[in-house]
Image (cartoon, rainbow over all chains, first blue to last red):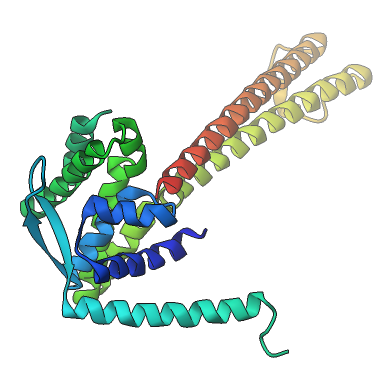
Length: 106
Length: 200
């Protein structure tokens, strides 16, 4: 898949996963990798950018073993953004599907 | 490479960033390593998935400068952002293209020198033969110094012609070798670029 395209979609994926529950970095990576092949190193720069944009905040939580983990939690703004991106994505997919299936009103 | 060397390399690749931010980023990667190891991944697999530390550092820098360009629009900030984006993929092409074209120019010049030497040598030999047949050196009267006459001059001209042509030929062969080397280095370089870009 086109790399740039994937990067844009990745943002939606991160926000969507976090809209269901708070996650720490590796968890997010795992959730996304289940369905999409990604270069895992690219997630962290993205997380930082989204955090700087005020999409989520972080808090530390003890883990059963090892040091505490950094959890990401969506802000109100992050939820809005997720809803907006998801709506945009659905419109886009619907449009592409119509074209691919050849039902674009010929 | 292992976890420690990866983190050390990442740290140095992030130098120049505010210290708080840098340690924050390193914390994230260390946490990622620990969590992945805990879930049973091997160190090699984790390293491969993360991508090279320099590339990771470039991505952090890129989002940083883009952000700055968005917050404080100015030609300088925009220029920095463009440079940083080029840095992730096209930097090499832009900054290598100039010297690269210069090298191509030099190679062409070497070929030109070789060909002109060969042509000049052949011309001299031809002239010498003409001189021998007609008994005159009308094509270059200036070449007749006092004391050198007839056969000696013709032999000198022929000798110089052969020598020039031979020198041109040698340079031509060297240029071919250089071209082959140039070609290989170019290919290697392109492959390297592809590797870097793929890791993004």
